[in-house]
Image (tube, rainbow, N blue to C red; front, side, top):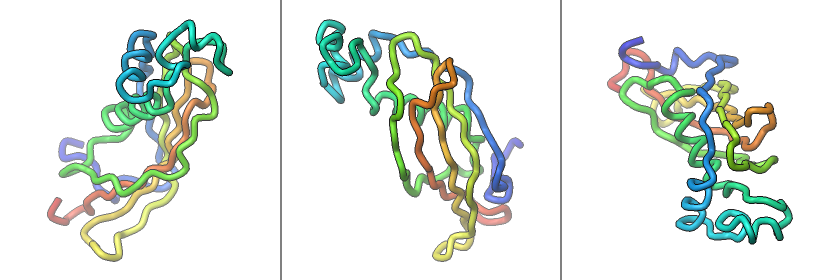
Length: 153
């Protein structure tokens, strides 16, 4: 689909998936040092004394990686570009550790035409990030505004 996806291409139940992405220890610590400097994220020694007992990625690091995988791999290219309208229910049920390989699965769970902008549609996707063992490490519900076919994108 060279033009990209339109609202009409996102049927409820449609699923998308990214490729795996490996989480490296150095990236965990550098992300945390800049954005979430908690002991369990920035130092292996300090992390051993934490509730995790080892170095773990910040949830915000997991969210950033998940967003990249969602936008660049799982979500098809949207005609004219999509517009994020919100994220609900963000949760990190299982920690991410160095060496984990994460991938994103997304499923369209709702779709409706925008009331205020009828040339656009709103799609809601359940986005789940899993590690190499199938453990869920993050969940969120994304709402994205996309152009309708035949509209000015």
